[in-house]
Amino acid sequence: MDKKIIVKMKKEVREKIVEICNRFNNNPGELINVLHQTQDYLGYLPAEAQELIAECLHIPTAKVYGVVSFYAFFTMTPKGKYPISVCLGTACYVRGAEKILDAFKKELDLEVGQTTSDGMFSLTCLRCVGACGLAPVAMVGNKVYGRLAPADVKNIVKEFKDLEAANA
Image 1: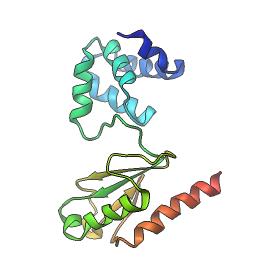
Image 2: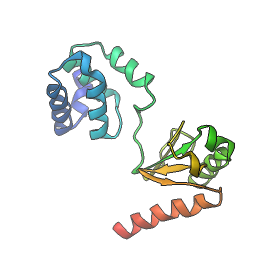
Image 3: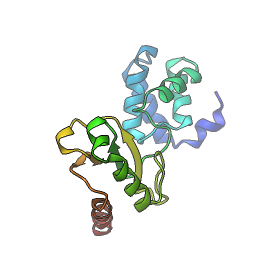
Image 4: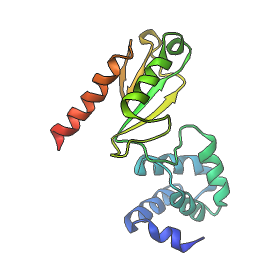
């Protein structure tokens, strides 16, 4: 392993990832569980974390990367403090989810998969939230917004910017 890359991570981050791997007895069969817990801790799975996990589980880094890149749940880029997910499932799509997605793109000046430069918002799509009766739906973190119109997007973004300003 390239020690230079691992050194870039803070000591406490390295120790936490090693602790997560140890929790699963460094068992390669627990890779997905290790990745889930590491992503819960870091918010994403950077290359350095993947390399350390591979070392701890005694598997090739390419195998870790293959799992991370295959499953949509895992991300290699940091999410914003307020991750926005627009549902593009059938019910939402039919009821105008693409227009909601376009409104978020325009309001935040982002493309899907990107994060704002201030780290506040990231934008993704998902296939179903399970709130089809409220279509079209978007989520900000765990908060669901339903029966959306493009005009609602500006107020949703403002709500979180105001929250951030109040907590500053």
